[in-house]
Image (cartoon, rainbow, N blue to C red):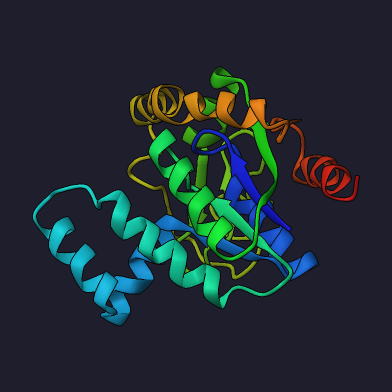
Length: 214
């Protein structure tokens, strides 16, 4: 089963994709992770991407498609989760070709629907333990003892520099402008299902499971 998880940054795509990897044995194809891994390993595609990124340019669709192609060939027969790809109509067409060449097809396009104001609050309030990486939130999940990590007892915490309101709103606008327009393509194919992304992790997971098991 091959699926796309759609939704703006912070909607929980990565969390849900990882859960599907653990519970169903699916392979998560996250373009960001794959690019970093290819660069770190010095693969031919990674070396090309590294040179482009070093020049401050965006990695081309051709390079992203090459990464996806490599991973598809190595993915298990449990199926793939596309996270962060496709982002544009051109990439959606490229993905269809890649799958068709392998006798595969998309089964579902699942959009995590979120409220922008609530999402801004969710993202800007999050922070992690600098030592063990445990996640916290200013409003929803503070450490049990103020200033002390529940997991490892460290007193050092950090926030991602891009977890600020301006950046979050910019990324939301980019999602609406570039990614949301591919939804009609999949709507016409009857593939799109929507899930309330503002629920708890377990509630969202249960809704996704219901779609996959239907």
